[in-house]
Amino acid sequence: MASKAGERLREERTRLGLKQEDMATAGGVNRNTQGSYERGGRNPDTAYLAAVAGLGIDVYYIVTGTRLPESLEALSADDEQLLKRYRSISADDQKAIRRFLQAMADDAAKSPK
Image (cartoon, rainbow, N blue to C red; front, side, top):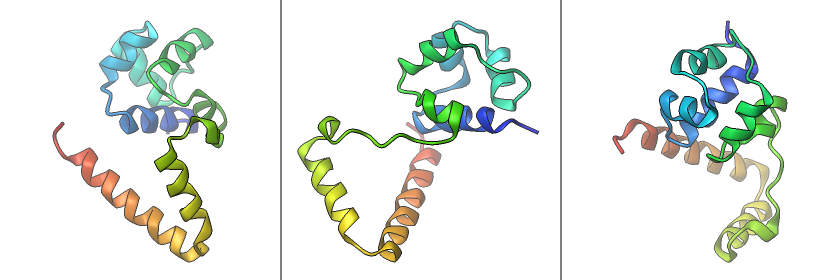
């Protein structure tokens, strides 16, 4: 059974469209070690986590299972407007939008790059 951190590591790698080899190289480990991390057989050390953070991996999420809210200063004007509009609609509508976006992301992940 994979550890939750291993599952989140795989989720982040997939979210960014990276292969295990890409992560392993960036983290300074071999592909077998990367697979072991993702299966929960081994836990990555801080040097590995710091290295893969440079790829855009959300290390805080990997370790804690919680995503930190992105600072509004880091958002583009379009993204900030989208977020404000999202927050202004009902919880049911937000849920529907999240389902729609997940379906789109799942479809994009299946498509060749």
